[in-house]
Image (cartoon, helix red, strand yellow):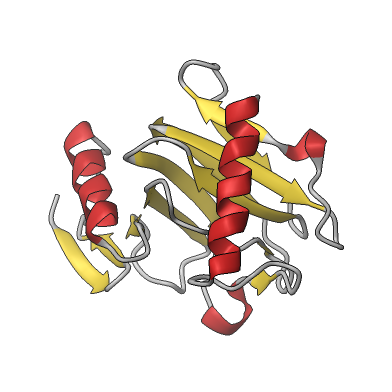
Length: 176
């Protein structure tokens, strides 16, 4: 499979009919995420942003802060299936209170390999092991201004507050 560079944050598959997801692709995307300043990178299996179903690999390294968000307008559910590494999933109330019942650890050791998040739910993900890669599915089309509703109560990416919050989330999963 040939990977086409789509942006500084993503590649796209060039397959015409079928594409396998193998360990080589997972290793390549994990390496891309390590080299990316944001410590994460997407590999799109869907052809373009207008498709109604988006399928992608999301490679994320520890230390990458994904600002809590929800998919509100239009409402979109989202699912993650763990392929490599370990991922923490956190959900929150509308006022930013952590939902203790909405903490999910995806790991081969725990036997929990996937999670489905309904539309309108505030959520984030945290890489808890190097070279974490998940298969992500959500409805399209992707339209940048409305794809994610970022939580006003969560710090912006790249701030010291975001680094502190990420560290607290990582500690939360370590204590479990």
